Amino acid sequence: MCGPKPLDPSSSPRALLGAELRHRRERAGFTQEELGAPLFVSGSFIGQLEAGTRRMQPEYASRIDEVLGTEGFFARNCKAANKSKYPDHFAEAAEAEAHAETIKEYAPQLIPGLLQTEAYARAVFRAYQPTATEDVIDELVEARLERGHLLDDPTRPLLWAVLDEAVLRRATGGPKVMAEALRKVAEMFRRHRVIVQVLPFAAGAHAALDGALELMAFSDAPPLAYLDGPGWGQLEDGPATVARHELTSDLLGASALSPEASLALIESVAEDYEHEDQP
Image (cartoon, rainbow, N blue to C red; front, top):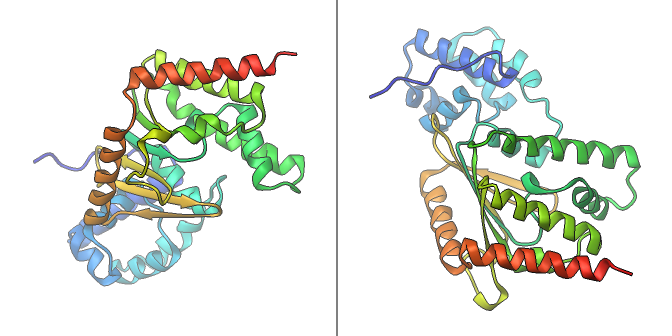
């Protein structure tokens, strides 16, 4: 069996903390499962901390210091490692995306953040926070666009998105903004950078009526599932829970239009918005 993938401590404070955790754990003679037991977490959770795909919370850091005898090292450093430009409920998921090999997403209402244009993102954040200052909205938009640079790499991560037809039909920001946003999705599709399917209204009831779903798979850590709603988010790592959400994702893909038919619909709706925007 291959050994752990070498970590790059220079990549981020969280990677540095994860590398140090692995070093201290191995030096103390603990397996991941043995270190997880007194923290009441799984060995896979410890592996995710070491890989940098999960953030180390202060309560875990303090307990790790006690178990490994590290004299407060992790408690002192986890705060710096957890600094994020994203909202608290989404920060851990956004940071995990940066390490993912594959991302599968079901979007019930909005174009996925990784594919949004600046104008579309601005319309979304303004709807969320109608009384916020322009500086606040600018910071949120900047963080979202920066997150989208994950797709600058020609092959990684693989993004497979299932968009509910409502995503196409809800005129977020108006016809001009929607036309541009859908053209970007289609362009990324035609460049073979992403896989997109549309779940049509005609599909009726489906496996994810409760809301959005994101699945992330990693080369060096167990998979994660992220569920979210207005102002909240939950990252799941339990194998049974993640497996259930993976089944949901498979069912959505089976109910959706083919990628080719989805592209045709996306471009048709974009064209409708462009005509609507004409005087």
